[in-house]
Image (cartoon, rainbow, N blue to C red; front, side, top):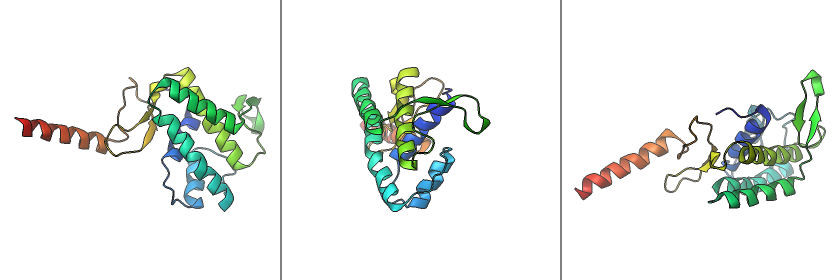
Amino acid sequence: MHFNAYGGNAALLAAALANLDDSCDARTVEILLAEHRVARAALTEAQLEELRAWCLPLWEAFAAPTTREQVIAVNRLLADAAAGPYVSTHDGQAPHLHYADEDADVVTRVRAATAAGLALVLTETDPCRLGRCGAPGCRIVFVDVSRNGRRAYCSRQCATRVHVSAHRDRKRQR
C-alpha cells in the first residue's frame, strides 16, 4: 500500500505515538519524532507531558470498533489540534501540505500532523487500514500498509501466538 508521503508518514507517527509506554523519556520521543521526519523535535518536560496526553486520543482513533466511531475520534483530534492546512515550499522543496505553522512548537506541529494523517488514511484509503492487534491482551495499534489490507496483528509474534493457541485448542478438542 502506498500512502502519500505526508499523510502516510504522519499516520505512522500517530501509531508510534499511540503505542508509546507512559514511562518513556523525552530522548526516546525525540528519536521517534526524528525518525518520522519531525523537524526541531527537542522536547521540554512540559511538551513531553502534552504529547503523552495526546497518545490516548490517538490510540482511541485506531481502536474504535466501527468506522463511524473512528470518524468521530479523528474529527475530535482534528478539532483539538486546530489543524489549518496550507501549501508550503520551504527550503526549496516542491509544494507540499503543512497542517500547522512551520514556526509552531513541536507539540502543535505533531498534533496537527498526526490528526491530519489519520484523516487522510480514513478518507483516501480505507478506514480498516487503522487497526488494533487482534491478539488477546495486546494493545498495539498500527497502520495497515499491506497490499491487501487484511492485517490483523501487530507482529508475526502475536499472529503466531494466536494461531498456535488455536491449533492447540483444536488438538485438545479432538
